[in-house]
Length: 493
Image (cartoon, rainbow, N blue to C red; front, side, top):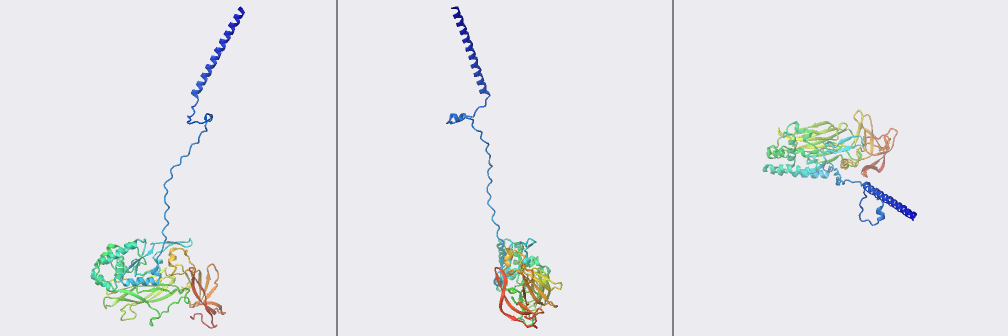
């Protein structure tokens, strides 16, 4: 019994120890879990979790998103530049020149837009030149050619209208009756360029007689004041001109014929009006002679005096002028002009003025002698012509060159000249673009040489005709073959 009691006591003691050990173990586990919860990072709260098992998994971290700045406002593209155009109609077209000249004689001074004030032109990348007044084909005083902006035309027209509005009624009436309003308006405009003193050398300077005007030339205040002060006693005689050719027996001068004396379709004289004559040098001779006769509308029978002056360019070799009353002497107002192409600028302007007594010089009548900017002439040391190159140095798409095309038809050949001891042309050798040697020979009278004698004179030749193909000048045989005897002169026409 005692033994049973002892065993029971031992079992109870062991149970107590096991329970105490178990309690201590559970307490340590709770403590460990509690500490772990305090130091562990908290998981982000998840809303609307559908799958508890998936939510228990650790969600992958999202990469930071790149913030794009707002795009700047879209700038509309710049409009293309306005195409450059040159209007040379009154300077290259005989019908247009005659129309404006007739309007000038009927008291209308037109204002026409020519183009921008300057245009840069490149030639094969070799150089850049400015197309200035020197390259305008003619100086035409029967209208106001204007360069600059198109809006300037209205401003200049308004100034001219203001001038007529302030003129004395009697003066305006007489000028209209005499068809002199247009020339007198031109005279008033030009005398303002000469500081109101058209009596001396300052009135003959190039700046007073430009081929094209700009808006800055027109001082509205000065012009209206000059028009308001004008009296009939101030009005000078108005000069006009005419060409002198073979129709004048005393002064014969043969015209150059296209296709015979030079390779082209057009006459050298572009137009001839009472106040402007335009000539384009097409024949190859280095020295050219022209004759002109001037007349004047005079207010009285007092003797009229004339002055012939170069107002633009160079190349004048001789100017022989005569003064007097046209009704008394056939030489009155007559001038012979000799031009040297070797020293010419692109254009030479010679103006004639008239006056009575010591009065002011009147408005000009102008003769313009022009050379195509594409033509390059080479001369011997003696001054005789050696070669003329017509191969265009200018881009055919250039607006300035396009405007000149009706006046100066481009071509792609070079003419070389064989001369005798007196400087007369014996043979013309022509080679095309890209050729080294001449493949065509021509007589000075224009026929193409087919066969020649041993001394070089033509044996057989055929006439040619010129035509325009694809904007270029070309030629072909026309007519029968002409045979020349051995003794025939190569200079006969």
